Structures are given as C-alpha cells and as structure tokens.
Image (cartoon, rainbow, N blue to C red; front, side):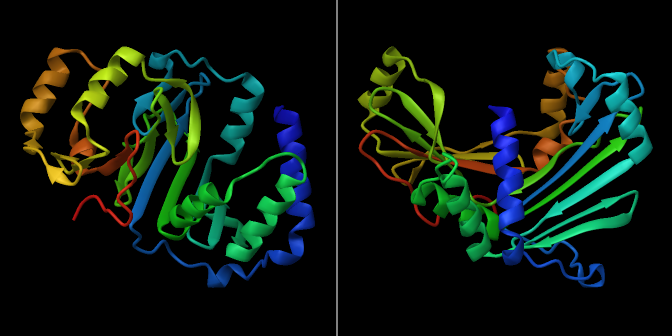
Length: 266
C-alpha cells in the first residue's frame, strides 16, 4: 500500500510539473500571520530516539531509529520546512534547497490525477482542505540534537470539524475513523437533544457551547496546573505551552450541522 502511494505521488508531481512554478529563492516570503499557525520542533539523538514538541517518544513506546538513518540525519544537521497558503520552502542548515509555489488550480489537478490511480478525495473534503491550506502556516524544524525538542506552539482559530453519526460513527474533517462511540454512550448523547456542540481552549480558558448557547466557562491557573502535573508524575516539564495554545472543535451531532464560520480564540 505504501509503495503504491509513493508511486502515485511521484507520478502526480512529475505530470503536474507545468502547473508548478519554481521562483527564485530571493523572492521567498517570511511566514505571515495566519488564522491557524503551528510551530513544530523535532530532534533526533545520537541513540536514535525522537522527541517531538517537547515530548520524548521513547516514553510513548516509540523505538529508536536504525544507525543508517541516524547517520544521515546527523550529516544533514537541521532541516527546516515552512508551508503557507501557496508556498512551500525548505532549507538544510540554513541553505535554501526548495521553493514550491502552487495554487488552487494546480492542487486540484493533483487531486484529479490521484483519482485516476484510485485515491479519491470528495468535493466536500477538498473544500475543507482548501480552507485549511489558505488560512494556515506550518513551520517544522527537524534537527540532530541530544537536547529535547522545543514545546509545540499551536494556534488554531478554525475549529476542527467532528461529525458524530447516529450509530456512533466518528469522522474528523470529513475523514471517517476506524472506530466509533459505544451505543451506551450514544444513548446519553442523544438524551441531551443537542444538534451541535463546540469547545474552545484559548490560553487557559475552556468555553463549551451546546446549540450555540455557552455553558459556564472554565479557567485554569498555570501554577496550580503545574503542581497537579508534577504530583501525578505526568510526562510534562512545563504547562506553559498549553496556556499559550488555542484550539477548538465543532461537533455535529446526529441530525445537526456545523457552525459555518465559527472561530476560536481572540
């Protein structure tokens, strides 16, 4: 399956070459403010272990990479990738190696080409993908270091869409998950009679709404939260990144719809 996917991607990029423009690196823009922003730091140690966003994956059961992969990563040093609305740039150790400029028409051409190989993206899913692409900046740094990675920085003003079916089926951003919600739990959800629910975590304050009506908001104190985290011996060095984050979900319950245009945060 993975081999097939790689072949399709390679063919798609090759055939869509005329639709993609490769401008000079001198014109490369710096990341601009966007509704949705995420900065991710990844480190690989001498022993071949990964940390992502300040979290040691070894503690989560992720094994070490082989010596060959670790050696390649050590030679590269640091790879930096920035994805914006119509631009993708990459550099190695500060030296630019790639700038890809695309637009909606070229993205659609890739989708159409992938469909001929059996990878179908429905129009409603593509609409959401375009909304995220045009309103988001993603900044990823992967580097060789024996130091832990920097904490994840995330600000998503656009709530994630979650669809909940009558039989417990769950889909995120129109993509169905392999598992659902137990029917006993679904019974309690249906009992409430709500058609839409949303939750917004914004810099320490959680606001929950049911059918557009706000429930009592909850605000956590960073110092108290840090104390509880330490007492429970959780794998978190500092809660500061959580209190700087913004993220929300908009849930369509059976028979309901999403709040189009809803935002989370300031």
